Every structure is written in C-alpha cells, then in structure tokens.
Length: 186
Image 1 (cartoon, rainbow, N blue to C red):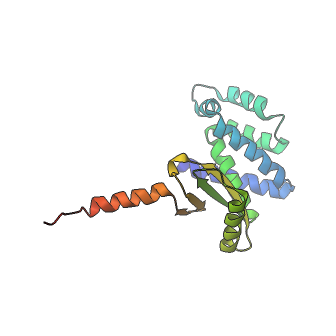
Image 2 (image 1 turned 120 degrees about the horizontal axis):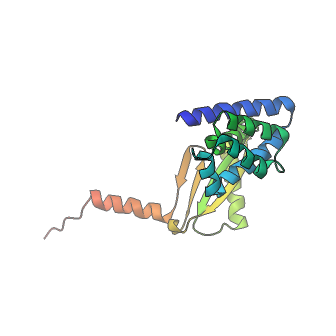
Image 3 (image 1 turned 90 degrees about the vertical axis):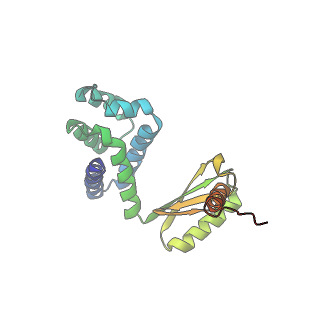
C-alpha cells in the first residue's frame, strides 16, 4: 500500500512536468515502454527489486536498456528514482502514469476477456455499447483470451465487471446446488 502511494506521487509529478513542458504524448509512450519491459521480463523485474544489485549498477543497466528508446526527461526521471532507491516500483509508477494520462485525456479502458478470438462484428458491437455507457469519453478496448471461460465473455471497465461467461454460470449453479441440496421424498 505504501509503495502504491509513493508510486502515485511520482507518477503525478511526472505527468505535471510533462504537461508543463508540453511533451505528454512522448512521456506516455516512454512509460508504456517501461511498463511493458517490467511486465514482460521477469529477470528485469527481479533485478529492479533485488537488494543484492547495487544502485549504481541498476542505473547503468537502466541507462543501457532505455537510453536509446526514451526521452531525456524520462531518463532523468528514471535516474532520479534510482538515486532515491525506488527503482523497485518503476513498473507501478509507469502503470499509474498511464492511468493518470487516461484520466487527463478522458479515455476509458475496457478489458474484454473471451474464450475465443473476437470477430470484427462483435468488436464493433462491444465498442458501440461501451460508447453508449461511458458517454463522450473515448473508449480503448483491450482484448485477452482465457480458454477457461469455456464460452461467453468477461468485461471490465474501471472497477466494474460484467461476467457473462459459461464458467461463471456453472460456478453459480454449483454454489446453488451446494446451498440447496436435493432431498428425495418417497
């Protein structure tokens, strides 16, 4: 919890600095790069969190990895975080920055999880329905596959979740049978 608050403060300071310098889009792209590096590479995450790896070594590694891809402001920010020994929350900072960016730009992110790949027709229907729900906010749809759903979909928008999956309906049936056992009468 403490790390999340600290990460949010760092993200807020970075977004205000990016707005002040009018390079918000560039910094958003940089933070997406950092977030994907943290999400996709377990060894990279472990290195950032490791107390064994010295802070100056982490700075060197981060400069090697990101110096060609990120802007000067983003690199200065990462070096500052590393000097404050907060590099372990770099991924959380990037994630919070992207959330703040989406709030600033009035973008709503919806995650649709299905058992099979979504067709273009269904994608258009989901997008149209979401636009009617969120109003004049821009909608960004992220799709993911989960074969355990069996069929149907799970839609997440912010803190809301609509679960219309077959596996969820089977779980509800199972709970109902557990709480309402059948008693055979002769």
